[in-house]
Image 1 (cartoon, rainbow, N blue to C red):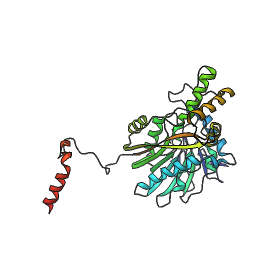
Image 2 (cartoon, one colour):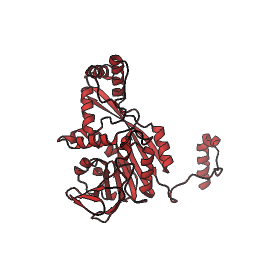
Image 3 (cartoon, rainbow, N blue to C red):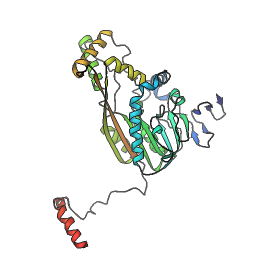
Length: 353
């Protein structure tokens, strides 16, 4: 490890930049990176902010633990699938992006599907160190930066493209995260992301609640809260994005039982880290939940499904070259004439000939 007077710790083996508050740095490739505020700010106190749902330090430890396991890659099938879908949306934009940022990159589930003809340079950013050190090799020149989604350590108008896959659902202040993404994007830049939605793991949530009510007379949350799709569009609009697109995909995966599902969630680093989580669940309640899960949702082959709802979002930073809606009152045809559209088209063709 080597330290500089700029407050940057550089691990030469993995090219990992750890930025401290109020400092700036220049990587060996000449790219400027700017120091992030204290990464622990959102998790030092439960009352510090209204947006303090998750214990970010706990989530950091969970992800680092998961990435440090010898068989960590076996649990990343969902991230690989969603990363592929995000990359497909990048390819749908018919342009080359000179400089891109991957927020919450993990082991690089989006860039591994991209090419240098699509993205010329890339910054991998994640709040956890371990996944960055095991980042998948890509043909795109890149650097790794430890950074929090709520405090991106980059100058305004830096990136042409920002992508994010399955990390923003653990952010405490999601409105701030969207404002930060908007800030670092260049004009006419695009944000393409994916995150877990409100109906994710509803089978597990329902089974645990019913079991606790039956065995203990009440229930506590064991699955973290998720954002609703309507709120997501509103938050992106308030951050300044335009030409918004938000769609929903449901991915259903079958497991031998509830305990296998929970083991895989732990291996993904997706265990609950909400402040109001209950750290202990009684053995009787767990067994009852597994039985309820099997009874209510079990398939004929004995497996149980787990639903992951994925919100896929696209938002553009405004630019004068982008298409704009026509001025009010400039229409030359009323909605009442839509039923006669075939006649109008036929008449127009005759006049042209």
